[in-house]
Image (cartoon, rainbow, N blue to C red; front, side, top):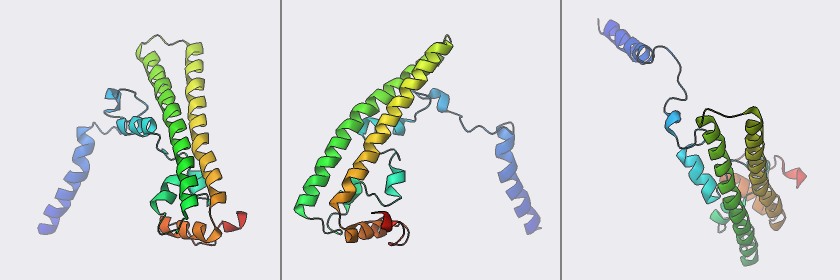
Length: 179
């Protein structure tokens, strides 16, 4: 009897939410109330603060460390004072560019959202707005990736291997032959 009650209880946990939503998958539920439909509040905050937003993953995960994490691990990496100063300068230039471009990108996404929100968007307007947003997103990503590229030559091979270990990436030897 206890087993039947447990099974029925489990079925209720699985079936009730599906019945409540009419059995329809609703992954965008609530997103229609966002200020900019394509961006969450956290996305906007990250973009306006110049944070990475995952743009530099191809660099980071292929052995090109980023300045923010290098500075976070500066003691464990035994970075010299001159390395820290150079990395801080790279980080600040990247951050300033990313903040400016992030603000432009947010405005471009806001314009695209407003155009659809007006209910009167024309195909040529759509194409222009999408191109503008895509170009800004690409420029923003380039800023982050270029900074990773510029950061690598400041480090010794040992520091790169240590960094990868500290970040929890694969074995220290993997991918290091390229550098």
